Length: 286
Ligand code: HXC
Image (cartoon, rainbow, N blue to C red):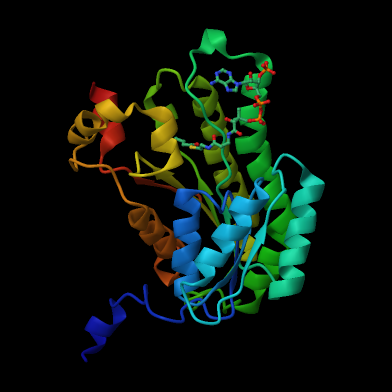
């Protein structure tokens, strides 16, 4: 094969690119995050998923483990991301049982539809605590392991790191706050904070080999987010209004995850990858 062709070939979606790596994911029993983790496991990683509901989290862990023969997936339920000590214990257990933490997905989120004048201070605080404080707690609990992981593939500073290099974080955010979305003030405020956090992590931790990025999904079919935020009888029309003409799939969020976590994402840091079929641009117009 000519060298120039080889140089531009992508290594993503190849079996084994995440062999012996570990992904730690909050909100991992949810539809979007479980698909992200499943893709990583399929490509070689072991995983630890964190959730509040014990049964749901443990069952999802078992289900994800079927993605690859020999995969190890821990499901740690009863862990609330609002409690730093619970997250620290979960990260420690993950590292002890699986050998470290190389990739982190901060995906736990809270949401409901409500106008601002009907959101109590405690309601806003609940969403801020889950989304912003929870993501912050996740970063704090896992950062030492991520730094250790990134250091394993430290290059001469000029050469890009090889495929599967750890020390990477993805925050799962949203596009709601780009334009102002009715009944979503609380989540918009929180997700703006999450986006800002990803940039802060990128610039402070980048020199240690860490990458920190955001995936901002649009409406993704068959997810809790869509079920909570839209009426079933209006979904067909909502989908038609999206430039791509349909809701997204969880696989499309998984693809974005693999892009950022594999060597295709080596030089992407502090960015938001919007995966929404162009939806938010139309919100900006309409
Ligand atoms: C107004 C509400 C409310 C509602 C709850 N509250 N639901 N206020 N309208 N529909 C208020 C309560 O009255 C209470 O305030 C405060 O919020 C806390 O409620 P609790 O039920 O005690 O809190 P908690 O059990 O911690 O639940 C947190 C939660 C809940 C965020 C409210 O919805 C939750 O646990 N969600 C997690 C799962 C989830 O939302 N997943 C969807 C993610 S989808 P008072 O003042 O009465 O004490 C997603 C998509 C993003 O994020 C965007 C996609 C496009």
